[in-house]
Image 1 (cartoon, rainbow, N blue to C red):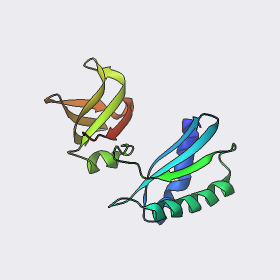
Image 2: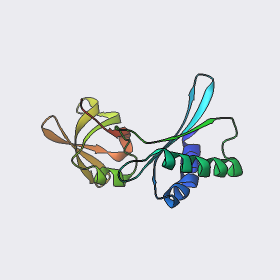
Image 3: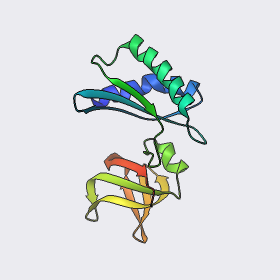
Image 4: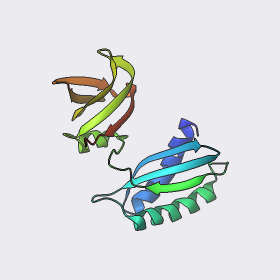
Length: 152
């Protein structure tokens, strides 16, 4: 699925997921083996349960069938984003201030493109991390992937 189609799918689904009292965290469309999967990640305060996933699956399935924006066959999966939740929206960077996060960038900063540190927030579209004892600034336009990180 092209990035444009993922964005279109997200825009279509987000108000319906929100109507159910949930947050749409992420949408993925990936091929694994011979099958395509549309994965919808949802969350809410206190976490989601099987009833939340079922409700979203039913609503989204009907909507996607009606709108037919994905022409090929796929398997629909709805789940929690898990312990290493991705950070997608600007609000996520404020919500998870003080948490340990990993950020991958498309360009190197000080010789590195992967950083794990304490999230200080987002200022002027720049992610601020406490990394190796100092603050590092990563412009949002070069953030390839960011997610909460759990240390075992």
